Length: 420
Image (cartoon, rainbow, N blue to C red; front, side):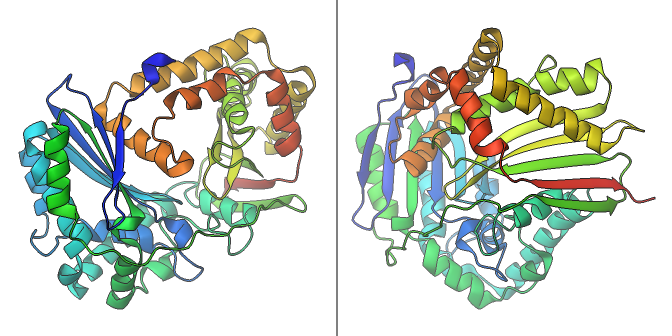
């Protein structure tokens, strides 16, 4: 595990901006990864989707950077850039040749500190239309596209920050005013609510001077209070049925589960891999290959800051009842809970997780994002070895405990059938 020991430097500016520097001069590249500690979990009912909408607004120009120029300047330098929003955070990232690092700092600092003057009604209207079309294409007009938000709205109690989709509901997306956008920016886009990671080929002292030059004078807003979210579960099973314009029946089964890095989080990851992670995985072999009951089957463990869930999804072959798929799924879970998995299955899963993890760290931008990820969830950027060790130390007893703790409890079931 020593190979995953990352040497980094961490410090803060007086305005609260948290900075992590990681040097790697193997290639003349630099990655800048900026996390704002705001996601859809910071929204409220009736005001969903604003975190994602604001991510779009951050690419519409700032006081000294015209609209579309952020993308153009980085891409013309031979770099890549983008942003993303999830339940817990919003991130922005660039990767470019090292000599363009100052350009990246100028662009990011201008929109962190000086976006406000460029926020116009015209830009807002434009991006509302963009997000509305994104929701239509990816959710409302996509086969099975609304399943996710139907499930989470039932799985998490009303008002829980994970009970609505990150993209937001259509009526909320269309309702936002320029005042809403201004207030969101002033509340959450503040140095003390951000983490800046710089990774790659750079001179540390020079970078510190550049960070001071571009970020130190940005004023800080008041520190935000941490959300206080209570542990939740289901009192009884929730069973939902829905008709859609689809070709095949599909079943979704979801249970409340572990938060990020909490007990059983790694065990549930391993369980999902053993169930559906390969052609020889248990449910895949049973349902898809041996008995030809399902067109496909998948399982995954989602874990966030304020909650988690474990989900299994299976699409039935024509003529196969969803109840039969459900029965096979629960039989397999019961079997594993009673008898465990084989040592070969456990070793294969652990090796696959480790291999994928190490392979991802060949990219400097993946390392930069992972440093921010660990900083956010664990407050220790150098948690690479700790993270892998969770899987390495997971044994049969932990997997059986995870099933008993979570997957033998009440669940949400959604069945989607062809509308005919």
